[in-house]
Image 1 (cartoon, rainbow, N blue to C red):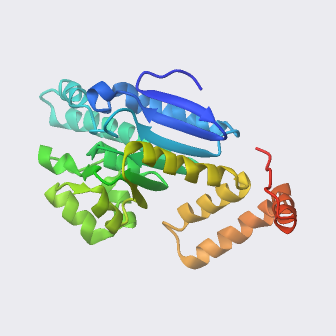
Image 2 (image 1 turned 90 degrees about the vertical axis):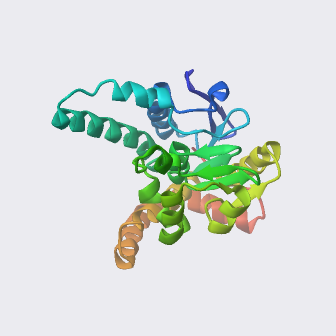
Length: 270
């Protein structure tokens, strides 16, 4: 994978490990972050060797959210005309939304490994992932309310489907911090670990389990889950019937069935 300024990306054993790499800035999301994450997930999407993505943060914290210096630079572009200011701000917000849409739209499962701070924009980011895991002492907060704005990069749209509407409203209105243990009770994270080393070991183990499955079957499963967010059950059943009419002809089905019958581990092509 190419080199990046805000990230370190490694590919091993069919798993792309995408790590926010600004530990000296608490992995704050600067301008490079927002452009590079789109490039990274485009590379991942086009690389059939990648079957699973693990998203983490270097150092003690996952991410403190959007870099306030970047917000200040956007403010510096505003002038006296309210209409033109609105046009500039709307364009910038849609640009930032596209960065996390790239994560959400990835056809491969994306697993977030969270330690330390997961604040503001970092909640938007992990909400776009398939699954989330954290250390017990991780700290989560929808911080936008504390700087006088509504979260606008995906938290308010995606988080209700993860933790429910009422709890999302409580966290969004109050900005209060919850730890990993409470995040697990709410369903924000699937599981917690005692420390960062155990977290990464556990998440990579789950990633390896997924990477060993048929990539065709995993992609189809993710596509059906995504489709059902915005459609009725009968629409979903019709879609999966059409999808599997093609995908059940894949060699992966025969490979999986033969391996199961022989009690062997299947090996799937990329």
